[in-house]
Image 1: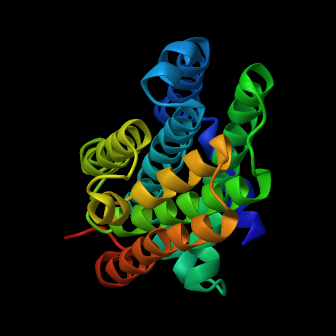
Image 2: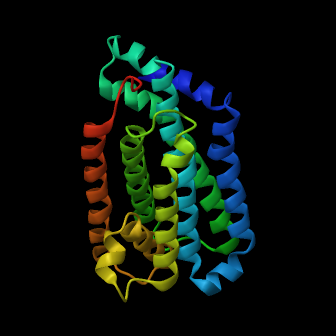
Image 3: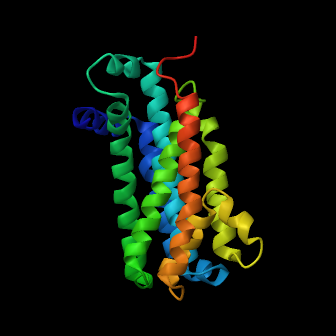
Length: 239
């Protein structure tokens, strides 16, 4: 797994399109939200800003880049060649997605660290970390499922748009309006309960025991995405 991950990590910085989606766009969005934090805090809250930052990085740095990577490796038959080695399927997929996940985690820690430095620390750092990890696991599972429907890295620009836009839109909707109304709908949408959890852990005022159940819908989406990935993922290009 590690040799595959090392090779893939080097490829990230050689691909200009991936580099832009993986680094430039999330960093630009992070800088914008942090610079205009007072305005966005009035619209929602500081927790809302944190949630949007997490989902922006999750959608672009993690989800979109993972789908593009897996599609490119399938198209150039690298997946097929790897599967003929002693490495198992799980090790191959882990090796290919580990650099993307690591880069996204570094970005979210750096951007939220800057945000915390200028606006104040989150109320529950440990539960916030759990919420971010659950969100990233969900986005990575959705990436595996989407990669099964994506024939090429160019096509990934289209196939990743629905989930990317939906998760960011849901994060904005829940972060701004809360879950007092349409509670069940908002929590069941992809990213809804994770957004509420991030908002709660950043703003405080909600006991951890009341926030922990919010992990369940996110983990439910992980299960759904994995089931879809098992049915849809292909190791060779469609003929």
